[in-house]
Length: 291
Image 1 (cartoon, rainbow, N blue to C red):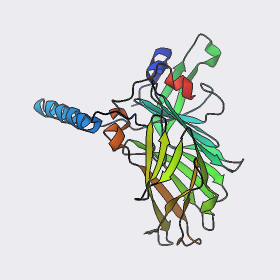
Image 2: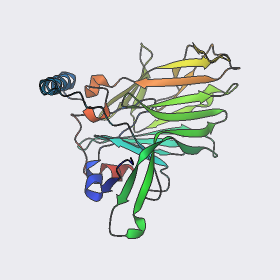
Image 3: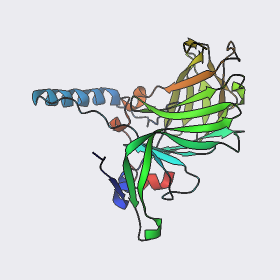
Image 4: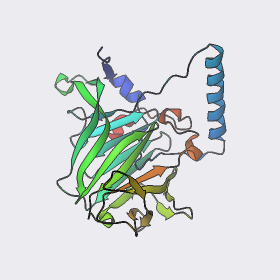
């Protein structure tokens, strides 16, 4: 049975507003005096009790789609994804994030010194399709647009790929190094931030005018010839106020290496799923602003 077509008209694009990503996994949080985590947990408990009373099982969350650009957006955008109050677009040398309305957050993770030959490819094609019928110019309408479960940046740096994917409803990125590849070539400029700091626990704190993004210390492993993984030390490398990278001082450069940072967002958003954002108002034209 074919998956139903998904229609995105102009009014629904307006509803898909406030934007964000994460890579590593990234998320935006507005600073407020209330306790959003407690409220989110309370709402979840009420929903669970109501469902239990009705004999209903919890509804599974829809997987995150990475939609390819077939002319419905600016040519620089290769893929885009969104959920709730957040969205992200993926370009050859950057990942763009946006969220919020009254105090909108826009962050650009730019890959400095990236290869001019980098290509983006979708991974894990979905069964559903998207239709974009926006505006009066039929020549700009697009139908039967494919979506994927992730995006692979091939050849981002020499011997280094980057994979963007969903993990538990979150957006994450992995750096994938071939044997001999130089991890220190990876330099990421966090545009839209005011400062970066490596905290005592090894997290990377990215400060913005509207809140903080905190990336947890990168889980990193070498891939052994027998297929096993061997965990190795890796940490963030702060280059200056807006640029960072990674260093793995004891890695075996003769082995493939995977660097997988994560985002600690529950402190700010009250949950680990993109559609559980309650403290960020949806912007009326957020998706248009991002793309």
